[in-house]
Image 1 (cartoon, rainbow, N blue to C red):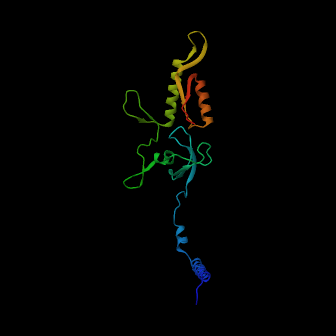
Image 2: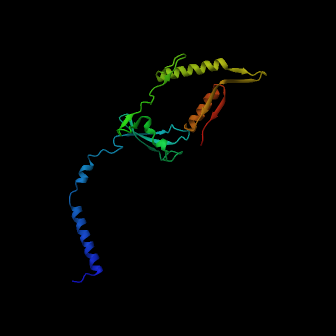
Image 3: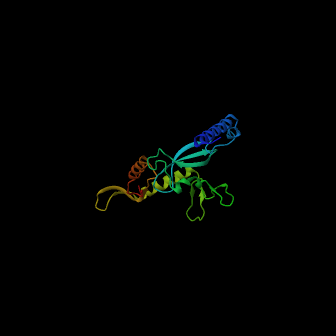
Length: 200
């Protein structure tokens, strides 16, 4: 029997179709094993946040399981980064845990600070305080500083209602609304020294 090119291709096509039909008709064990696999983002809650590394203010999505961040990725709906993150932002979860180079396991970051700290005058040690105590102490220092340095009139008798002892430095990691509120608040205190280090 003489085998032409056309009959050879037909025979190959029939053999391939027959083998595929046989493979697809049988039960595959791979489908049964897929149900046992835990997906990376299974049973997680997703939160939007802003990267804290620089003043870019890029948005990211943090996936949290059992109170721990398990994944960080860019937020495609964020108006600054539109889903992109730089290498530092992509490694944001390492603020909480990092990969131990020796074992390859995730270990808690011992450098992470979980509560406000204060160093009292004359002390060389930082001590933990509660958020309520921190807010109370900050408010007390701001009020005392403003009261001690407030100027109603300048040297020429012109009414100025200001304090030169309090300054504010903003950044683009805050939203426009947050920066607007901060500026209004600092102006209400009478501060005339306001600036922003935003690079965008």
